[in-house]
Length: 328
Image (cartoon, rainbow, N blue to C red; front, side):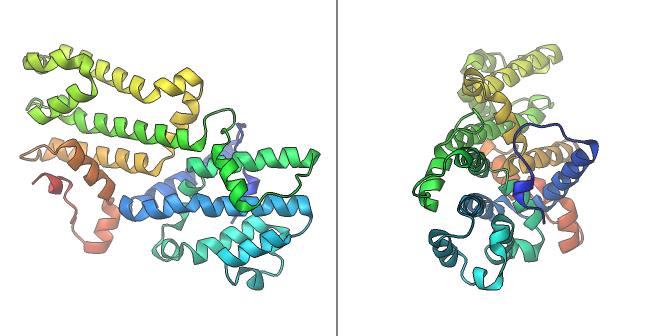
């Protein structure tokens, strides 16, 4: 496994080979992600950044100190019991060795069940992991000029990392909140589109949801026959997409980090699985429309629990997960 320290997060140009390798890793992670429900993946995904940060802090401290000082040895012994005894030369590449131990001992289920690559791929791209990486690079640059005295404890380093801006962008907490909001708006449009362009018209609860999120279109519900006209319908849909985009990106655009937000959304595992479910749902909806269209909450729950067909077929032969199961 490559050390995370070999892959800079700063914007750079990638060779064709590097781009292909990254694409392969992304596809592999996405495939593994869709083999289990979000409720199971989420806990590991939210926990991973703390271990990633511990590895980066250890690397930063050992580099500047020239060896593992007592605070590092103490916290490593507390959080990774037995690690130092089993890895004699770990101080030469602490981040690499620590993460290898963490993957096997703290995320053993992911390793045994075949979704560790997905956890590493998405966990290392979690906004908090990105913040830890950005702060690590900042410390590496500043400490090379002036060594801090005393060297920061892990808890102190971790707090500063979470508050530090991500390469001139927002803090990880602000970015995480914006990502969650963006994913929610995307789920709304994924859910709405099949019925918006379907032949049954919008159910009352869908109209209510649309009015709640897009009050600018309140007059739409008073002219329900507009949905029957293709030209009007297309225009309305463009307005809806524009309104949703403005809601999701307004602060990021205003403060100049819209690009960072869009990139983080595309790499967020909940968005990846929501998009995958939306594609499957659209196919099932066109072939076998359910008797009742699900509410947005029901649709989002189904997306979170969605398991891809290849996994389902391996486990149970014929397809067992009905996309419309939450609508009956």
